[in-house]
Image 1 (cartoon, rainbow, N blue to C red):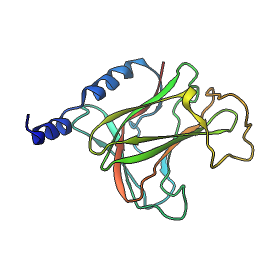
Image 2 (tube, helix red, strand yellow; image 1 turned 180 degrees about the horizontal axis):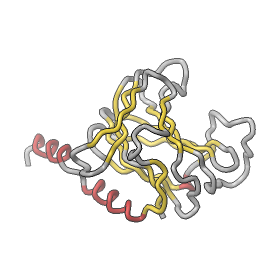
Image 3 (cartoon, rainbow, N blue to C red; image 1 turned 90 degrees about the vertical axis):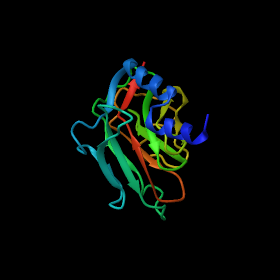
Image 4 (tube, one colour; image 1 turned 135 degrees about the vertical axis):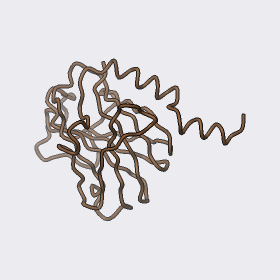
Length: 187
């Protein structure tokens, strides 16, 4: 098969992995953040990070959050996007799931504060210009080694019974763009 045709096929149609991930959304027990209310409850740490809600033809009927971000600066949190959790109790599940489509290969950080005030963070690498699923198991999350609030009860087991929100940010060295689907908790 012609490689150009393969590239067009991947861009126009969701991959089998994405189709499986979308099907697994049926395993979602809680929505963390969806976009039916636009950008309400969603904010960027920096006015140079531009947020919008759009539709993507590869995901019929699904709203996505699009993030246009500048290159990195001196503040490591300057490209953070924060989303208030629509539902705070995630104990019915074991993992967080969403899909992402970046304009370039990138590394993404994903964080939240648990009920004990401990900042949990993980990092994942994603490939450019294709929708791909991301699944983050709670038991794979670790306390953030670079930052903890002064009131964090370090040493406590992770407690997702009252999570107020999530944050995520690109960790690459250039400006770019990416889109994410709703964030859900899976069984």
